[in-house]
Amino acid sequence: MPRAGSARAKILLALLPVALLLSALTLLRPAPSGGSTLRIATTTSLDATGLLAALKSEFERRHPGVEVTWVALGTGQALEVARRGDVDLVLTHDRPLEDEFIRQGYGVHGVSFACNEFVVVGPPEDPAGVSGARDAVVAFRRIADAGDRGVAVFVSRGDRSGTHLRELRIWEEAGIDPRGRPWYRETGQGMAQTLLVADQLRGYTLADASTYAKFRGRVGLRVLFRGDPRLLNVYRAVLVNPERFPWVNYNLAFEYVRFLVSPDGQRVIAEYEVGDAKPFQACFGRLGELGVQDPYEEEQVAFWASQLKG
Image 1 (cartoon, rainbow, N blue to C red):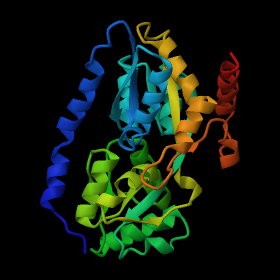
Image 2 (tube, rainbow, N blue to C red; image 1 turned 45 degrees about the horizontal axis):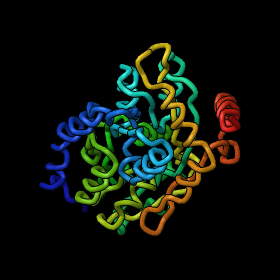
Image 3 (cartoon, rainbow, N blue to C red; image 1 turned 180 degrees about the horizontal axis):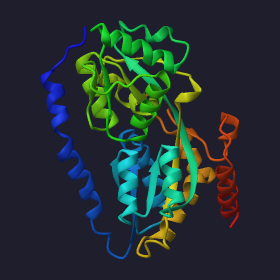
């Protein structure tokens, strides 16, 4: 049975306003004297896993005097920050929101640079029988059924992040509206905090595999379902449009994305380790082989490939 009302879970849920404030303050740090600052709004998983720090180290080594800074938020919040022109670049993972951001003129030259997968994690005893599901939709239906019987809890990020939005689409495909049900809890927090809350409640959650790999030693949750094409998780870089926000550091953001999609940047991504795992794949120019057909992506892959020749 899930342990509802855990004191630790309540404390974690209360930390959101402080966490968001501290994250936002990182954008206000001054640039180093004589250098340039790149401001990024990023999804939390790239930050929590340490991949962004590894990319920062390599990029700054190649560009002395440059400082890469970021604020880690859910994808929806990250794009809202960019809509105000408060950052130079976004790194996110929800294609519909990113497409809207570009279509409305806020972003340009969006391109995929990394990917991993979402996984359904939960207690080892698996009271909902998720491990035997044939696909993610069936897995979610089993969780809902077990929740209605009082033997399971599902913990959602509830923060308009790419992970949360993917979760909602699976619920919709399953024909279930979980909101307001006693077994459905929303943290309003990032993936790491949500994993900790799910662990306290002995519940299920949808997680990106990279953050789970980072925190699996701290939680008793296990991967119970994976491998559905619905769970492919693609990270995309989108430059903030300098025609809309003339003050953004477009040139530096452009150089950073060129590094991300270069052989050296892709190598950092592919070889980055979390424990004994390499949780990210280098995905520049590879979406087609992963089953994603997208004319805009093909156009932007050609554009960025041409920039690598210069």
